[in-house]
Length: 427
Ligand code: SPD
Image 1 (cartoon, helix red, strand yellow):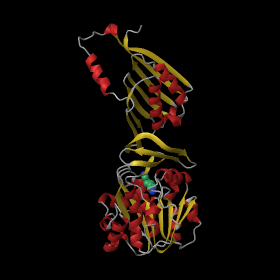
Image 2 (cartoon, protein in one colour):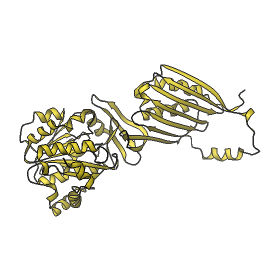
Image 3 (cartoon, protein in one colour):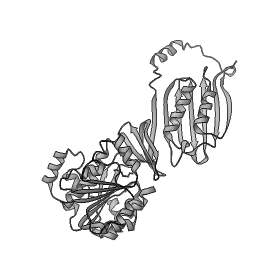
Image 4 (cartoon, rainbow, N blue to C red):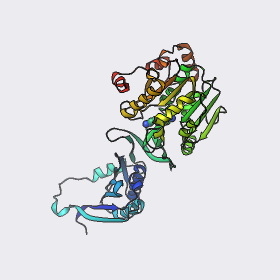
């Protein structure tokens, strides 16, 4: 029979579904499934999603390995099925062909380690084999699957369990709930991290409380976006709030977060909340002038449905809908990850609210690329967040509410800007 140590099938899968070829979680599941289907013992799997497209990964099996590299834009996967012993790698081949929906394929089978060409050392490996099999735990292989939020030259990766709890393509975006090892359950929109259970408080406390304390008596508040619910949860901690209108374009985000991120989506039943699943851009265009004390724009990044949340006309409409003395707070992107969006937004706000009425607050979000993020303000009045000195009031609120990020020092400190940020903000 075969006088070789291993068998290697080099496979070309063509005409595959491009979405499948770009989905790190489903490729990992399929590759592990292909190994198991052929009776292999899986030791671990490591899979990465690359920029802008493509997945690479390896499943290490006791019988060698299965590896893959995909090019979704060509509907193509290069797959290596390398096996030793009795395992029939053609079973894995058939399984993957089905999973990837490959319309065409080719395969080249090679024997590896021809024993005619090798000289066997005089060395007894049977005792080592025995020890290795005692250590092996076939049910508990290690999965190494990464979610990557990136642009063309920078990224932030979070390792997740490989389980995808929610995965729906809404009319606006792909809504996913994954379980990351370090930060727990997380919401991803398209390929961007929006929030995670373990660091969401950085963002949600900072989008809410500095503005609430700067204003001092905000009663009528509009939140545009914010479908996970974290922002309205924080705003509604303030007793003087009478009404919060929240306009989120994507009902799938609300649904996913209610089910899987309940500690964030904790205030959707509050009677002060008027929740609308609607287009915030159209909503603000039609809003009555001088209506709101605070307008909070808790949108995602300026691609897809949130692109219009970075436009001059949108912020002009926000300005008009604010009462005198009102405050606008917008998700302001990162001065290290997307400098252009960051500075353009500030220039827009300076143009509408005035040069000295568009301060920027910086804070840290470990799960966003570069970790440094911003909220940008538009002040339609004289109250400036930098000069708020309500130390006792803030500290008592922080203590009674059990806040974990915001306090009176952070309030002032977050408006201090490094010199490179000052340069970005200059018009
Ligand atoms: N890159 C992430 C930008 C932040 C988007 N908003 C997050 C929503 C949290 N409520």
